Length: 389
Image: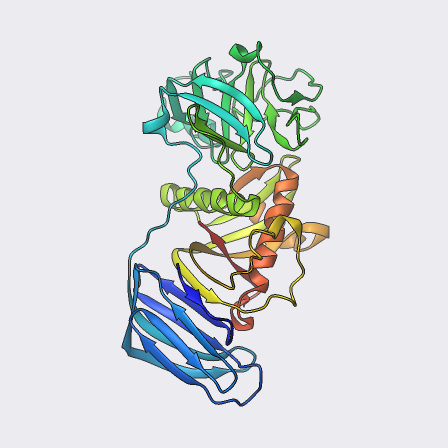
């Protein structure tokens, strides 16, 4: 972990695959104060008459001091320069489900927000990925005879867990004897043959945590329930509930979804929509190999929110793996034309989350954007943010 003393703001973005880094040294508190900059493979030191800032790099990152180039002053930011680096990515995503190690084990499903047990001691014999949401439209290309899957939605059996892009499908039939999450009144509707996990929009199908009243998912049928990955933690039953700050968990889950979808489907643009079908955010994945090291000093000028208290710690220095994204908010009728164009583009993938989580994610993106040096906050008409992995 990087460590630094308070002083001159320092921002370092390392691209592990490109082996390059952008270093930004913020302006001292007193304009025009001379700075003495010292760069070694394992640290960076900035001295001024008023203070001294030292940034010690993580063990997996080493700078090449002789490669410094492109030194320039950017008003409002400070000094910019680029360096060559030697770096190894040690990104450890918060795994929602490890298929190889947890299949055939007894697992417990927890509400991530409060730790309430949702499903206890469920033995999962099959953990399978679901096909893409448009799989039904492609059946005609696979088969030379009538669709054999027509009117046959994919529902998990008693010991199954099906994994979608941002959700789990599980069968709750065997859990009738134990406490269950609250189910809102449900109207019976037929499932579409083209989409195995959608109900008609008028059906009230929310699954609510009994303790904290957070929306965990939706009922798909009398036995099948969809739980959103951003709301549930699955652990082997012998382990205790892991306490993970909410904003860290949401960022890691979304980052993992973006990385996996971009790798599997070569999709880099996403719409983040609520369970009500409303689009909240347009996301464009730029890269997934960033390591951000920063010492931003005081954050007194940034509004604090309870959701982000884990970000606003006393320690002013941090190092973290991240995905870099461009985003546009679509709340309060913003970016309506762009949103409509993205929704009609078949190359853009939609991720569905609880509406409240969409707003949480937008708040996290806005907060992360506000901590960046001013020159990095925008790219064309999009805002820039890093999501911690």
